[in-house]
Figure 1 (tube, rainbow, N blue to C red):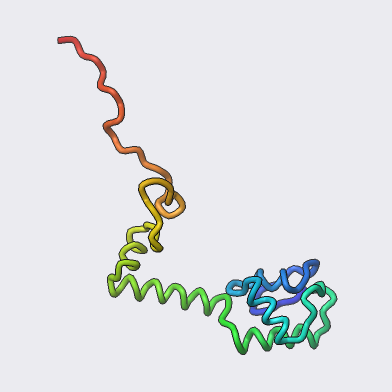
Figure 2: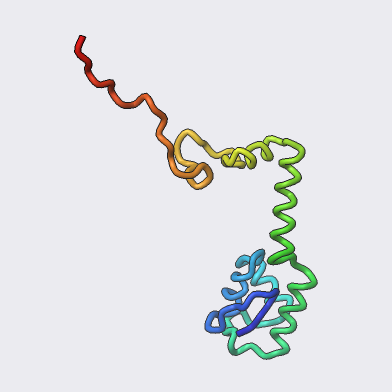
Length: 128
């Protein structure tokens, strides 16, 4: 099992897919990393030589922000826009969608479980 950027990547998968297990590396970055490291994308992780593994590590360390550093950077960016009270910051604080999505319906991932507001039940009939 290879460890790259502090992540153990699965050994049975092709290297282009296995690299996407690292936070901050998607399919596009994975293919460009492999091109820069001169490694065949369809090679299985278990079949990589130590030299190829090291070239991949060097390219990632030199050119890409991944894992903890990237998560810290994203958290700091969100904190900054909250502190300056921009519109996006206010949406983050309120736990609402940030990028212009509708909230009248949907948005359940961001807003949480639906809470029914009272006033929808009919009143019980009373004798007068």
